[in-house]
Length: 304
Image 1 (cartoon, rainbow, N blue to C red):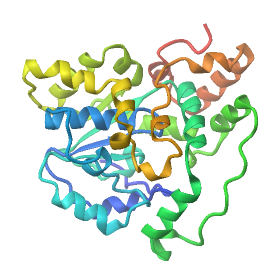
Image 2 (image 1 turned 90 degrees about the vertical axis):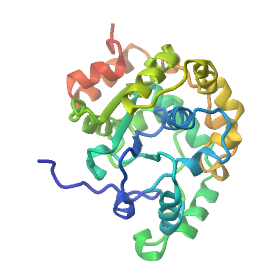
Image 3 (image 1 turned 180 degrees about the vertical axis):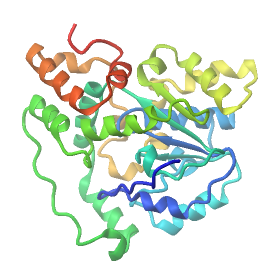
């Protein structure tokens, strides 16, 4: 028996908004920790569902974020209710905070947390926080906001290494290593369920076509063989960056939409962390997650 649904709430999301969504047979929920390939997976699902590289609407309109506090609740519900294609929604809520339905497929993407930390650092630098908070204020009422607007964020540390450790050692309710590993653990515990899919960012980079073909099979989507080359090309990082205006989520909140797709590479942390850092990081990871999950998400020994 599944335990009661957990509630996740922060200044940008409230998981209870899922209570308003009537799930349908065939729905897809893409549930990832931030900067772990969310938009990439949304794009892949869009390409598989529509079997076309040309979309009539921006990606975030086709694939809404139900528990986001950047859009009015009724607007999200109306958008999803009106959709007649196979729905694919995004969220950063862990699996234990989502309504679980055997008719729905739940997808997560794991990524080396050290790369996520670097990507998150660039993400924060590219975020226009005044615009973001203005959108939030317009989208939520006083009751849903849960109190007065949050004050300005503290200035981040000047050192990239210090910012890395702030991400690693922060509280679970904030984007960071504890929250990321908790998110993955909720999927890891359910990985044997036929409607739960765990993919790895590095696997997607190393064999994008193979990953897309396997995902299509899991989703029961048949793609004509002649369509595969164009679909795989459109899912590549360079193509997505070129189309940033239509693919970057909530484009108003970025200083530069192209920079939302910053580099998309692995191993950037090697330029930052020395052997002492890696030992400290290993000890922290071992405090937070199952050894098998740690091995799966890192794809290598943390210290060789």
